[in-house]
Image (cartoon, rainbow, N blue to C red; front, side, top):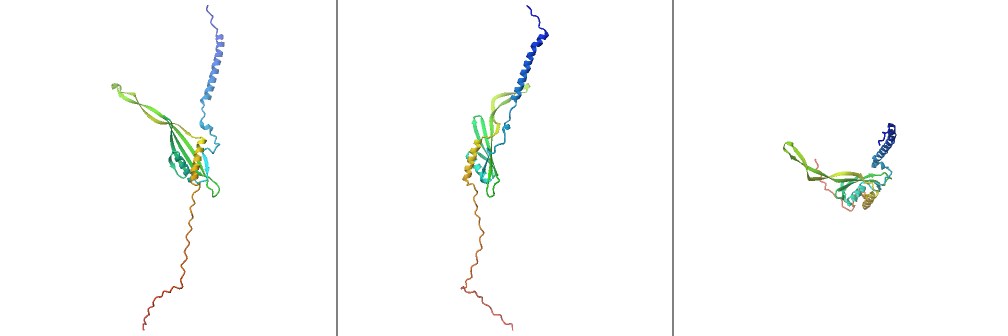
Length: 230
């Protein structure tokens, strides 16, 4: 038995819900894609509300504070790359995995803090930058001459390994900096906390002249007689 063909109006009625459902699905997918595709960058959480993570204040001069920071880094195996009265930088290497290399660059800036007259105060700003490197394998290829067809590049088993920087991040762990500042404080206490006082040398007073001895005989000189011209 042959069924009669459906009329155009009936097909339109059946097709409308399908189209509406398809459009709704596309809108939902587009909404999910727009929300999920937007990645939040890390600096959006930077609120600039704390000044204690990277800073400490010490009752010392800039030179004393940076010298204590230099000794603190040296005691932990850092290679010092720069050191002066107001800046110290050092680097240390780590190997957390067989194909991962990490380097931490530690920087300390010593700046004078305004205070009362006669009291010295220095603010130490510490920042650690962590660079992560990974091994990148590069396959080598060789060119082989094929006569009239020119040269043909063929890969072979050899490869070169190269360290490539894959990430760089400033460390923000408060406990990490707390341990460093505590060690800096220990080395600063070893210096005495104050510069040694240089004793002032008073100008030497002039020595009084030796008193005359009245008992000493007076020195006399002979007087020659003057000849009379007449």
